[in-house]
Image (cartoon, rainbow, N blue to C red):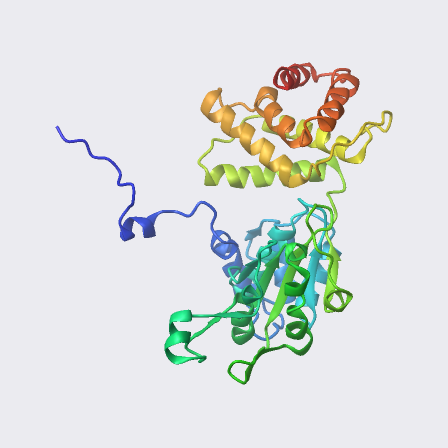
Length: 376
């Protein structure tokens, strides 16, 4: 008897029908973007899909006159979003600055999706990002056969955005080597990209702009030169102001991620989310939420993004190896991994916090026991 198995390498038709694990913002929220465009009667800058007002509404959320609910993509001060959107409507580039986990990448993606309808023009900054990733490269087969020509030139995402009047994203700008960073100076100041090999230049058309993200908290960052920093309007994204705001952010993102992974919603999961957020905020701030006890802070950032990761991992444990209810034991191991980055110093910080704060907190006995169990 033959047994039918799924092929390891599916046919192209099967690949096309497969659902992406994480759709781009313009696809995941296409219904909201379409509804906004249909009811947006305000002036739009050249080649923008929405007006600045509609872009801000898309990020912050709201209800349209026809009853369509726009879910918030960013929870924070409205003025921050308004300044960011307004910057993109001018000739200045936008730099989103903040500590890790403040939704810089998330905001940049949704800005590009709402403004240009395309968030895929992206340069990912690393220590090995070459200048070609920002300027242009060459098809070496064409180059050797016919010499420098337009046909042999391989445009970067930045060059494509310039010629098409779109928004391009540069992630982790401060991780890119300083000499490569500075290749942006002429592009941002003159809106021109010289191609000396061809004796030509590419001029940006109306609608072009650039959104960069950066943080100066992690190791391995390269400071921006003053000349490059002047080309940006810098918007600092803060950490959530309150526990409730951060709990809402984590719960919303965990729900979105869980649905994409076909994880069942965890009943009463918000209680565990609140505990994870409380632990992260207290260790991050160096003081308990009631202001009575000072605690040591570990070496990690303990950001909102890390809280989302911890809760998502706990939800997966509850779904696959538990009864579907998110409990303290499901998030304990994730918290330990997030807090203890330095095996020596951070473990001491964590143990002191457990004994001095968690152990004495009313209603947290199960959480204390679960954390003690995984801590060893």
